[in-house]
Length: 130
Image (cartoon, rainbow, N blue to C red; front, side):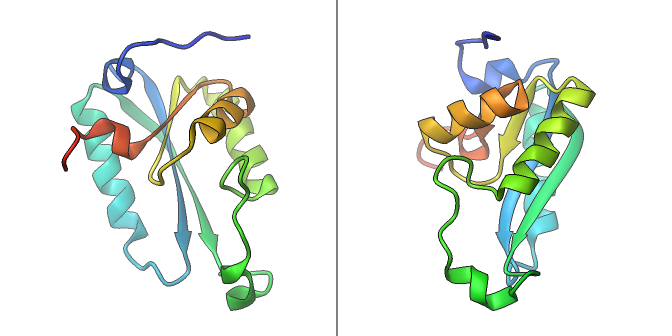
């Protein structure tokens, strides 16, 4: 099992290859701006963004009907998207995956095992009180 740095998440970004990940509703038209902001934050902490993955909720396969379905409590993402990101992360040798969305500790662990890298949330990059 791969071990990850135990310091603050911001210190783990220095020199790291980073994958950005976000889950957004179909109504969220500003998802690109949110990813751009997260990318700038990662780069300010010394990371290098090597990819972006977005899952839009309620866009296809039933549209609005799926908006009320619960997200996966294990991964936050759909199983196909989680596998896609895991393959891309491993192929690119990603060191850290940073989610736009808040994550539970359980989700971080499950996703870290799937992706083969440290998984953090964008909210970890900002000091408390922001």
